Image (cartoon, rainbow, N blue to C red; front, side, top):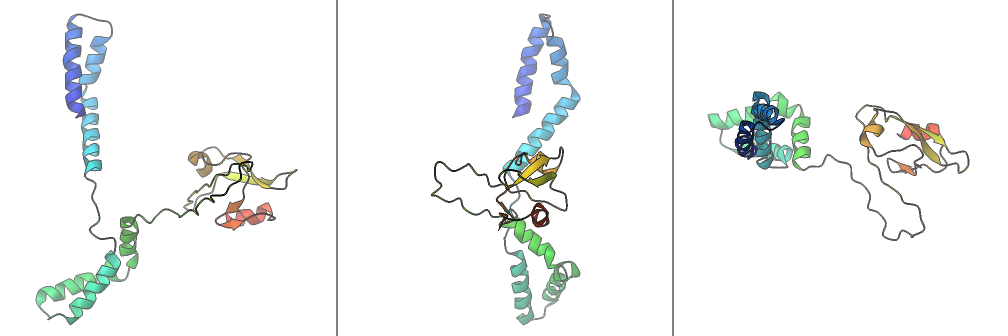
Length: 197
């Protein structure tokens, strides 16, 4: 891996250091530094983890939990079965279906919004249109809108530096809004569009 390559580079640099080539000594010391070695070890560990990422056993944990509880109701009442029923009915699993639902959502990779398909018959002379998907989590969009004086379209007036829209790099001042959250906005006032946002 990376550590092996670094070892080879250090061997080559040690030969150049003996010849006293400008700057090689400093580079050699840098590559031998403990912090760089530790950083490379962390990098290799992360690469190893990404290669062997844990995978959920089932994407249907919530329904499986209910099914097992029903099966255990009909099963003979051995001590182990009673304990398993008690565990599956524990408050953190029974009272909070959100825990298993969250697991299933992540396991199914069902956490991104679904965008409508692009139409196949777009005329060549029509303006280019982008579909932008920004997921807000109780944070402001970071952009202001206005009605264009000439066309009457709702456009992005400005993008606030550091806001969600700015960080995404997907919205720009002057962009025309056509639809927000699946709602066509033609004929709406900017205040009404803000409520949809």
